[in-house]
Amino acid sequence: MWLTVGDGLQVQRVHLHLSEWRELIASNTPLPDVQGVGLAAALAAVEFTHLASVSSHIDDAGLRPWLDLPARYAFPVGPTNVLRPAAMARANELIMDEVDQVVAADLAAVCGAAAWWVGFFAIIRHRGVHHRSLQPSTASIARLVLEEAAGIVALGMAIRVLEGHLRAGGVAEAGLRMAYCRALAASVAVERRMPALLEELGELRLVDLVSMAVPWRGRFTKYAGGTGAGQVE
Image (tube, rainbow, N blue to C red):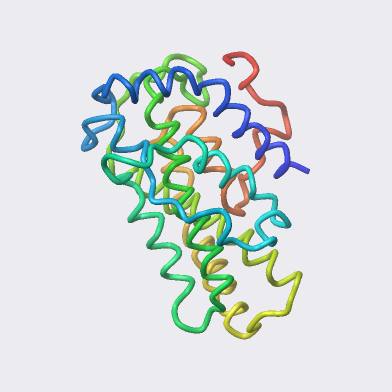
């Protein structure tokens, strides 16, 4: 249930902030609080796998909106999203040689989309609030932190894709199970870093996006007691 709530929250936020995001991209605005990324356009574009190449398991995993929005709004020209290499590195770690081509295509698609999602909220981050205080988020953030966030969101999407394929069966199952085991092992490693990373991200929307991406003990803690999101959006 909480995963559905989280998905809906992220999609709603994109639509709520789409106009201001577009304005910042159109004006080629420097990012005042992101170190190492000079212009908003460097986070807006993404080399996106065409939707026709992904399988029906994307829908089974509840990830269609995560692909539809980048496909609809990402800028197809200009600089490549600077977070994409970090997100695609996660896909490459899981795919290796033994994963079925259909599964590999799905993983590549969702991991590429993860870079756009992190980039979207990073572009409008300076207009947001801190996830705990709900006061304006004024601290700057390093590009390396955003790259780490993109890798974690990509990992979370990948886990959901692999779970969908495992439930369905019908592909090279040994390789699929190995990929899933690698993904879960990576999520365990991520958990140790998560509390500190969330504080480095600071801003509410980015924190929610990353904290809900992968399974960990604090994943839905703040939603069990209600969320502050309605107070600021």
